[in-house]
Length: 609
DNA sequence: GTAGCAGTTGCAGTG
DNA sequence: CCACTGCAACTGCTA
Image (cartoon, rainbow, N blue to C red; front, side, top):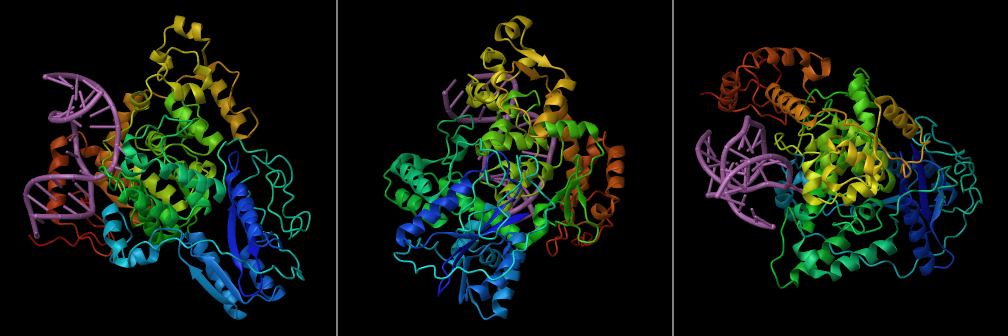
């Protein structure tokens, strides 16, 4: 983990932001754009000023900086991410010790996530309804505040202390880095001017994404959206095509919300005012534009309670335990995930890496994963498709593995939304209709029967007849020959995966006409997953269950196996579980436990019948 | 306390 | 092209 700290001004006000350069690879130029844009904006207000950037972690930097620059006030935005809470607590403590006044403002979400939780009975917000009830209790979303008209001069910028470099491990950027990271050689940057670093300076190759960052662009994009009143007022997420590109069907403003280059209040009120003045019938949450923001607040509210455990299954009381392949390794002392996964299933591992690099042999899935890797953004429904495919609707691989890939590549990545959506799609939290499974063939076909999206991102298949574009393995030899397409062997496919994993090969495979065969028979895997999900729902364990923690969950699943063929029995169990009334105390959820196994902690508060 | 309904966006088949 | 159903079936919310 490396951090860059942004500082401006040092008299009575001090504008401070923190940017994490974390697990960023091929896609990240919006972060750099955002920094440059805010710096330019500051200079426009005061020619002597700009964004002053120091290269050191805030936990170690601030205590020294407070003294060196005689800081009187520290102002920053509240951040409820688990890491950020720890970091900010350390910084606040250091500030208090030297008498620096700390002002924390909330503005990352519509409502302060801790307040939202308070107004939801102290519980994590797990449904959109809860957000829509709890939010307004806090009050209306505040109107955005205009940018300052003046900013004081920066003053002296002398640094009378040594730089402390962060740990070099773990180094998430070692893969895509092309030469040494020069950004940490000097605390005020290579030229001593506190400048924003370039990707080159960080040792990274040029970003492949076409998406750019910065407030100027964000406001322009927002104006354009608002100008289309009908689009803004009648937006319905499920009716937007995940296959649309240039232009995409949704707003593409999420990266700006992530980087802070667009105020969520600005967005909320611009949309709200447009709806208010719209003559026709406007759409409503959850499908409307504002509905999307409510979901974001929902995930932030859930994270605000869960802390570090929100982002993993183990020790998470709100995450259903499902025995997916490739679960995380756990530190037994902290019960936190270590960043590595258990590598005991070689087939699952092969499937995982082929999924990651867009080589599953299912063109719809591969196209989406390549769009993710090179552009850092995919449509929400596209994310659904690949997430369902990796987890409960295909590979049966752990959602944490998918979330890690999204964290690495998405330019709009936020822990709360990313983790929450992976839990949603894997039916481990927020959502439970696991029998609704996306087809890697039918879903793309529904939106894009011509296969334009696939042909754009899987150019190997660009000459293939649309009839086979979602199922090239079904194409007759003649059609394949005409399109110049041939199939990679498994070994060749794995070589390709290896090259991509090392960041070596030209990612677009522009000149290749070779494409993998599908990793598995989808209908077969669909049936397998349905069955496995059903079983896991009946066993009904959550991440904080002692049996999950100590590994004895395995026995429950084996016993389940024995009773499985008798369908009537399962139904009877269901009924009994429902009758039992579910001792649902203190957030410990143990619903529908299997008969004869009801000895787990906290579950046996049977309501008297 | 409970029954019935609805749920951000499934799919395949029918009319 | 749309609306509806059956598939086999989960859970929060509301009345």
